[in-house]
Length: 325
Image 1 (cartoon, rainbow, N blue to C red):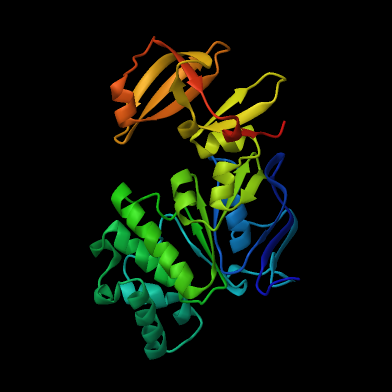
Image 2 (cartoon, rainbow, N blue to C red; image 1 turned 180 degrees about the horizontal axis):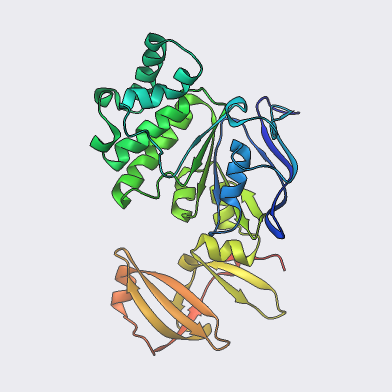
């Protein structure tokens, strides 16, 4: 049974001449969910977002919102809104007028659009700066204004193109929490493009990993991290080693499941990196496979290792996750 306001991609394809940027993808985004499109540069995630927004034409396929194809509608009539990476605020307009701009274009009177803008500015904790110009704001404040401006049209789906990439690490973590809070309060679908695995894991109800113009894997953040289906997903999500075991099967093993032991797989330490509560010990097996073991700080320094030393690696078979060939 279809849930109201599902967003669905049906055989969605985007070509630029002979180049296929997005290849025949099918996916249903659950309503009122926070979804992260995750993948390396050039994988097709931003092109997918821009097609949903109406800023890129669709070569083949359809984009359905609540069962209706919106792929030929102009951006303003789709029920979506997009927050751009650059924020794209009008420098000569006040914060309030930036937020209210789309309502002005619709012919809504000044008092009404300002009242709505003030409501949204309070939601993003920017009401006290409504009279300022964008140049008088910090990067984080500009982002909040851009967010309020995107939300003022009351979209059913909010699209965010790497919205945190311009912020410093401390502010990025703070704004992650703000975005998640807003999504829950508003009860609408957020689709957020990022190449940051930690960002996707922290935010997403669903992670959609893209690679080479297709969806490689989709699922909950925990499922995608703990049970990667392919070698690409295991390596891209980080925290996993990929090894070949007897019989030729490929397995992913989380780095925190690998331990230094008295016997096991013979390896040579290639580097040691202190990470505070743990130490990353990078090793190389006889077949040249690189394996990282995350060792608790106290345990490592009780018996420290140095590059060039021979060690044995072990892990429980239950921690091996077989990858698709």
